[in-house]
Length: 149
Ligand code: RB5
Image 1 (tube, rainbow, N blue to C red):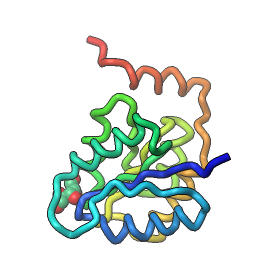
Image 2: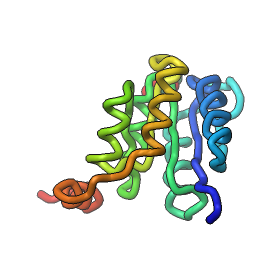
Image 3: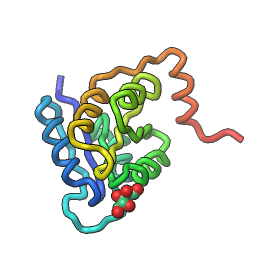
């Protein structure tokens, strides 16, 4: 079975953390797809959220990791795409819940808010935790529909 591909995208506010996490994921034997940005030039985080959404839609990656300075802007932008469930995570509990209850397909971290060891722990949990399904499935399905009312 080919290795799963994990896409990475960020703005300029999280380059160092993104590079560290890419190496961490590659060391697990997974493939990494770099969607930018790759320089410290100031860029607009919605463009990179959109690049992530496209990579997931066209199958170039199965899951993704997004970062910006706080993680807030890029998670708001990513969640405008109905097939994206992006979870802004700060700790291990959140990382676990994002998979077990929400079937998150994108982990979001803040390069200016989350340290490297916590970030690596969140990535490990995000990548290794299964969705529980059951009562959570219907709730996740509702999020993929157009808003009612
Ligand atoms: C960029 O300075 C910063 O605003 C961005 O990385 C992010 O924190 C926005 O939510």
